[in-house]
Image 1 (cartoon, helix red, strand yellow):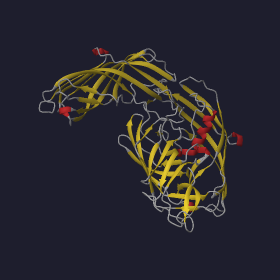
Image 2 (cartoon, rainbow, N blue to C red):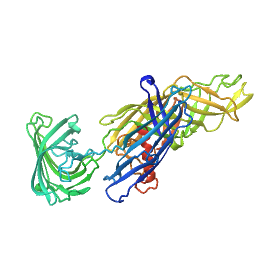
Image 3 (cartoon, rainbow, N blue to C red):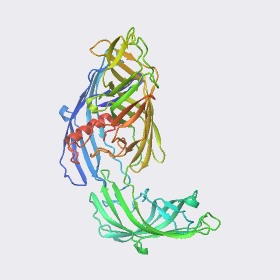
Image 4 (cartoon, rainbow, N blue to C red):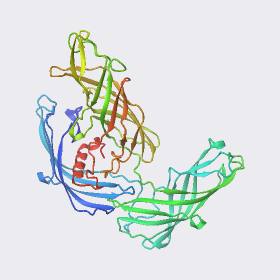
Length: 571
C-alpha cells in the first residue's frame, strides 16, 4: 500500500509517503465468459496490511472485510470494447479500520488511535461517445457526437493550378431537427435531420497559405436496420441514403456543394454498435463509409478566382470511441539495466583527497552501476518517477512537473580507491540514491502525435547521495556533491494510452492511460558525462494466466491498486 499522508492543524507541514505491504482475499460471483457485458458481485472478504520499522509509526495497521467483521461488498461490470479489450467498472464499499501508534522522538510521539469508516473505492472507466437511454432500453440516433476521421481528408485537385490541392477535413456534427419519417426501432427506421460539416480548408502548391474554416449546413436522410431494444449489445446497419450541403455568400467560394448517399448513386453504408454501460447510458461505436461528390467554383476577386472543379471519393466517418486525451497524475516505474557515472566531469565533481581517510587519493574515474529493486511489491523497479499534475497533451504538448520518488543504484562491482599515490588500496561498494532532505524534481513534456499516444521528453534535477561501503565491513562514507545532477532523456520516448502488455485493463482511462513504450532501453543522459539505460516496468501486471479474463488474483491486485491510489501507473 502506498499512501500519501498530510497533516493539518498542529500537524500542518507533516507530509509522508508510506509503503505498507498488503494481503487480500476477494470473493467473486458467477459470470458468463464470452458475453460482451458481464456483471457480477464481488466481496472484499479480507484485506490486511501493516507497517514495520517506520521512524514515525511504531504501529500502522489497516484491516477490512467480512473476515474482520467489516463488510465490504462490491460489484464489477466488464464491457467489451471494439478493440476486444474490456473496460472495467468496479467498486467495493470498503469498511476499514486503521490503527496507529507514534514512535518515540517522532512528530507523532505519544499519539495513538483507531479510526473506523466506510468508503467506496472504484475504477474510473472512461468512454468517448455515449448516449443516454431514451426510455426504451436503447439510444436515439444519431448520437450527440461528431462523426470524423482525423487521419483522412477530402482532396480537390481538378480545376486547380498544376501541383496545387485543396485539402478539406473536419467532422459532421451538430445534429438537429431529427424526425422519424417511417418505421420503428424493432423494424428499422428512416430518419431525417439537419447538421453541419465543419471543414478546415488548406491549400498547397500555388495555394499555399490559403486557410479557411467553413461551416456548411447539411441535410441528411438515414435508413437504419432493425435492432432489439433492451439488449446489452445492440448492433444495426445505418445507411447514409442522402446527404447534401451547400455554402452560400462565401467570399472565396461562389459555389461549394457536397452530396453523398445512395439517393444520388453514391452508396454510403454504415453500422452502429450500442453497448449498455453500468450507468445506464450506451457507448456508441458508429461509422459511415461515405461516397461523396464535391464541386466548387471560386468567387471573382478571391484567391480561387476563375477556378472550378469537382472531386469524388470515399471516406469513413466515425464516432470517437477512444478515451479522451486527459492523463491523470501518476507514477512510472523503471528498471535500470546499466549506468555510468563519471566523477570529475560534467556536474559530478571529483572526490577530494583524504575523503576516504588520511592519504586517500582524489577519485576521478567512472563508476559502473546497475539497478537494485526498491521493494518486492514494486517488482523490478529501482527508479520511480511521479507525474505530480494532470496533463492534456492535445491540441498542444503539455509540460508537467515530475519528481524522483525512489532511485536505488548499486555499483556493478566494487571500486578501487588508492592511498598515498597508489601505494595501498581499498575497495568499496557504491550506492546512489536521492538526498532525502532535498526533493529531486523536474519536468516532463508529453506530446500527442496520433489517436493512441505520442512521445515524451523529461528532465530531472537529482540531488544525489553516494554511500561508499567498505568491502568486508567497516565504517562507510557519504558523499554529497552539494549541487544537482541533470538526468534527461537522450531522445523522445514513445507512450500510448493502453498497456502494451496483453492484459485486461482495470480502468478505462484516468490515471491509467499513459504507458511508456520501451521495447529497447531508454537512454538517459546523466550529469553531462554519464548515462542510464532504463526500461519501463509495471510492478503489478494483470491477467497473470493470459486468459483475457479478470480472475481472483487480478481482483486482489485491483484492491492493492486502489490503496496505492493515483501513484500507480500499472495497467
